[in-house]
Image 1 (cartoon, rainbow, N blue to C red):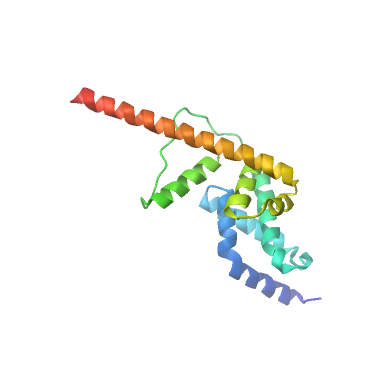
Image 2: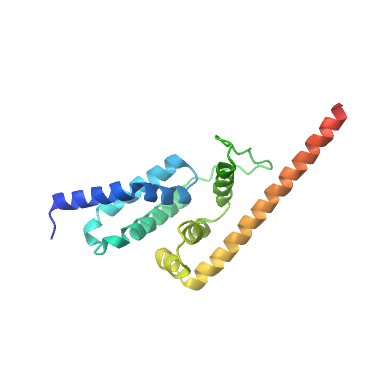
Length: 183
């Protein structure tokens, strides 16, 4: 059995080597960067107590992702419902103006319309590029459930994108009409 000091050093080395990838995973689960950091820190604290129990350290990333998903779900269930639905969505702020950032911001925004289970499936299948079987194992569900959840989630994302595209074109037409009236 390893000494307590060895456990700390092993865990610290693991976190140092994997922190960027783990933060990216956390960022994909929650839209706010500060919340993603909090999510990762909470998952690391919870994992540290069980570090010795992870016999195959090559599975530590999967273990931590599962802890992050569970933690995010706990937070979601515990949140106060003080969101107010509105007819107009606020404009998304794009800091650097590149198309890639704009696309990423839009994607992160529309992922917010999905239920946590759907978002987890989409993130693991498409961002983490896990197989259906790996996703099912990581989330503790059957492969059929992963497939049907992914199908419904992608349909919801398509619907949201189409809705936003229609809203954008209607706004453009309205602005052109106002410009003609002012001329």
